[in-house]
Length: 436
Image (cartoon, rainbow, N blue to C red; front, top):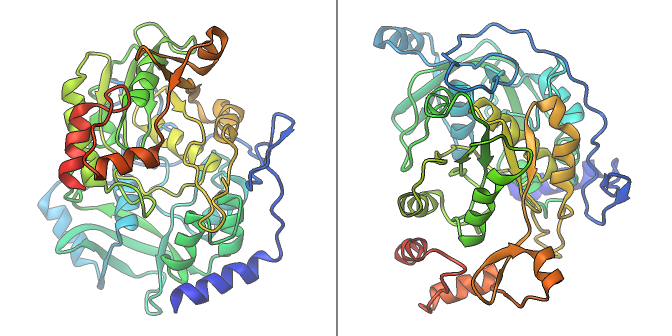
């Protein structure tokens, strides 16, 4: 019933909006996205928050200060819990958001967005201060009893995670949110479907106080902890992924260090998201196991591995900005933008919602405001000799290339067929077979 009502709500509301073509560098894409790359103002954000030592990474946190909302003493935690008048269980997506608010991954915000901030981010991709921010971070609920002024204990099972002091309660304009953030309000987009069917009727703003880190199958260090492991005098290039890393991915992020935009002796931070994503993606705990074996197999001094408790929206260009902002808080100076990053297809027609390079163009257009340098990924192919080269080089030299689609790979995996090592690492394949 909720699905039907939400779907009707989005469809009816969306009639007031037209979804035009996405325009990039003067060219019109045939994708469904109509994001505006030219409407963002930038200004510093003035706020007061506790900060952690930043001397171990040269990148400045977003907004200037790294937020840290975690209480450390048992006495302080007990006192915070004693102020609560009720409890609420966090959904998996909310749990990811709370963790990134608490540990500073979403710096400079220190809580879930109130109505003013929500509208500013949705409509202008910026906080009320003018600071660029990719996507809204909201606490959703159907609870009629929750009211501004309430202090609620947020839990994951029996574990207290945080307290929240609610500041306001509002009914969001979900069709407009989807149209602005995803480029469409059609529920055949997975992000719009999530907003329509998973999120509650109300959004509530509120200040977070952190109590405990969630217990996960994969370790998620805070921005301050990751920064402490990174060199303080070198560029740090972030690589985001939500799938197991195969040969082409590995070649892509290691070769990114040779990009002219990256300084000498730069390092790469492989930083996969292990939270909720598309329904047909490999589960986060299984993905994590593939990363562990690959980290050991390919260990070297210029590659760092960490894991991010982030809930994917599949928002294409807008999500590229969100990922760059988060990695900035983790100490990264550069960010690899792949083809069709965070892209998605219509669940009805199979049509791509975004053009292959929309996210790259959008990231480049906003990189100066964000303070992170995009590194467009190479379009790599494997030749018959097993060597990876760019598609342009292969075409120029008339080289034959090997091809294996993701669909065919999954069929071979399930059927127990041998997977060619030019396509996937043997250790990764073994983990996938054991867990699928």
